[in-house]
Image (cartoon, rainbow, N blue to C red; front, side):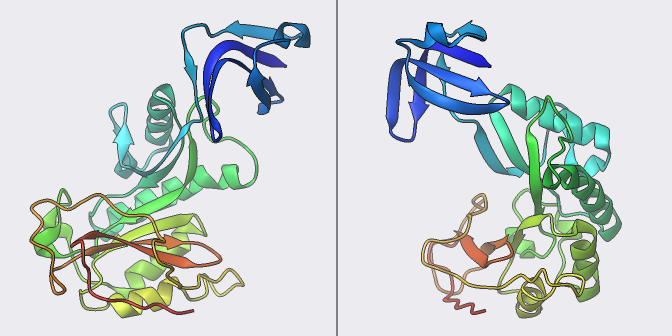
Length: 258
């Protein structure tokens, strides 16, 4: 058992000044005022002058520590996870870049292999952040609104390509960023919410007001209109496929049903 004492603790209910937190078997067992914490026994850390708060969760991480998700090696992914853990991120989505089919396939396969042990309760990188899944950013984007994505690899939806990536991800793809106005977008949505690999893990599509996770803003955005290109980030899960938009601020109306 570990007790962190005399810390300024940020909790969902507010800030606890001069607080204590008890960690038992790798989990927080109690958080409160420091009074009486000295009698709990076990190892103690004096956090006077320090702030204790929950770890950050980041859904858009391309790399860190000089490594990149597109390196497609376990060593690079571990470097990324260690780098972000040092700065307070405890869980993240490994994010791909718009590249060739082969490069994205390799990155997805490697990232999925890193996420699978976590799903089974075993750490991939014990001293790093937890890889919670994959964020597929592109390549099905608007060529004139690609932002930092390499325009030479931006392309319209290819069913066989995306089916291969779903197969490689094996249930670990959590987010996907795409351009909803491009050819094939409707087919992509149907495939994303269809059955994965022919088994019972289905991705259903449903939007609720304010739902979804927005992607980073695109550069040089035009004034809001109902016809300008937009990015849509889809939250893939067993219960729903949520939609979030990043540009324009008034995207075309969309109604996605199961």
